[in-house]
Amino acid sequence: MGLLLRGVLLSTFAISAAKFVLPGATMQGGYLTIEDGKFAGWTAEKPACEVVEYPGAIVGPGLVDTHIHGFHNHATTDCNPAAIDDASVALAKSGTTTWLPTTFTESVEDIGRACAAIAQADEGRSEDYVGAHIGGIFLEGPFFTTAHVGAQNPKFLIDPTVEVFDGWQEQAGGRIVKSALAAEKDGALEYIAALDARGVVTAIGHSDATYDEAIAAVNAGASCFVHTYNGQRGLHHRDPGVTGCAMTTPETYAEIICDGKHVVPAAIKALVDAKGWQHTVLITDCLICGGMPEGEYVSGGMPVVMTGGLCYVKAEDGSTGTIAGSVLTLAKGVKNMVDWQIVTAEQAIRMATEVAARSAKIDHVCGSIKPGRAADLTIFNADMTLAATYVSGTLAE
Image 1 (cartoon, rainbow, N blue to C red):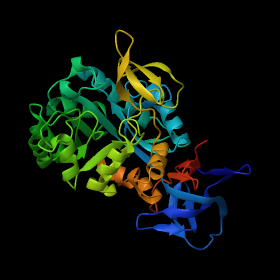
Image 2 (image 1 turned 180 degrees about the horizontal axis):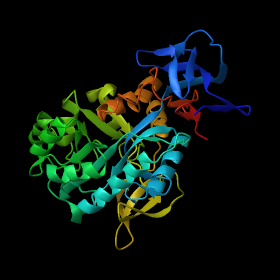
Image 3 (image 1 turned 90 degrees about the vertical axis):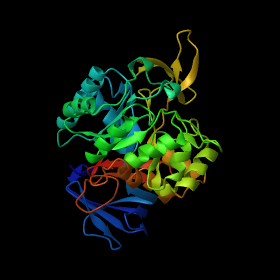
Image 4 (image 1 turned 120 degrees about the horizontal axis):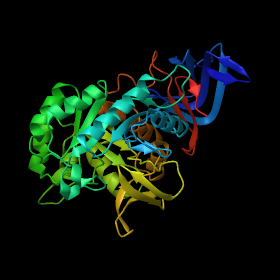
C-alpha cells in the first residue's frame, strides 16, 4: 500500500497541512509521515521524503461510524460480502475509514446470516483493497419495545437472551462489539451484565424505559445510548426518561444523528452541553440509500422512500410519515456541527473519531493518529468540506 504520485508508487511520504488533530493536541502546521501504510509520526521539520500538500486543511484520524446500516445501495443485512465491500469502498471515498455494519430487527436466523456475511467480507480482503475497515458489528435489535419500534420490524421483537447472542457471535467470528436493547425488556439486566463481562458494549435504544429502569441498565453495565432523542422516552420534568438518563450519566456515551433533521441543532446543543463533547458520538444511522439518488428502496426488509435528504418508512397505503433513517455521511455531519457553532472543528473531528472509537471499545485499533497504526486519515478543507481520505496510507479515489 502507498501513494501513487506522478506515476510513482511511494511507500514513504508526508502530508503537509495547516492543522493536525493528534491525540494530545491539535498541532499547527508541520508534517505527518506515513511509511508502508502506517503512521510514522508528526514533526515540525520537513522530512526527507515526498510531501503531499493540503494548504489550509485540517487533518484528522479517519472517521469512525459506529451506527450505520448501509450505503451506496447496499444494506448490511443483504447477506452479501461483495455488497459490504462495495459499500466500504464508497464510504472511504466519502470520508469514513472504519464502520460498524449495523443490523436491523429481523429473525434470529437472518441476523445470524448477516453477521456471517459481514465476517466473510472482513476475512476476504486483500492487501491492495481500499475501503473502510470493518471495526466490528453493531446489533441494533431485536430486543426492543413496540412503543418506540420506529423503522424496526415489530414482528421480530423478542426478549434478550445470552444464548441467542452467543449464536450470533459465533457466526460473526467474534466481531460483535455492540448490542442495543430496550432497558425495560425482561432479562435486560442479566443480558447487559453478561455482555459487559465479555467486553461487549450494550446500548439503550428503541426504549420506553423510565429513568429508574434506564439507570438500572447503566448500573448493570450499559454504556451507550442509541441515537439520543430518537426512539426513546424523552425528557420530562417529572419523568426524565431515557433521554434524561443519557444526559445525567457522565461516563456513558450518547449517539446523535447529526443531520439536523432527526434532531434539530438546538436540541443537539442541549445534549452536548449536558453531556460534554467528550461523550457525545456523531453517527449517521445511514441506510441503504446513502450516496444514492432519491427514490424507493428496501431497508431491513421494509420499503422506504428517500426524499428531501431523509429516508421514510413507506406505509401500505403508500404514505410516508415515520422516519426510517438518514442518508448522511459522517464527514457532512462533522461539517454540520461546526457550521451550527455547537463545537469547534477539532472537537467535531474528535467526536467522530476518538470518541466514537472509545464508545465502541475499538479505540485500540482506530480513532487516533498514533505511530504504528494504519494510516487512516480524513482531511477537511478550511470550510470543513471533504478534501481527501486515506485508508492505510492509500488515497481513496
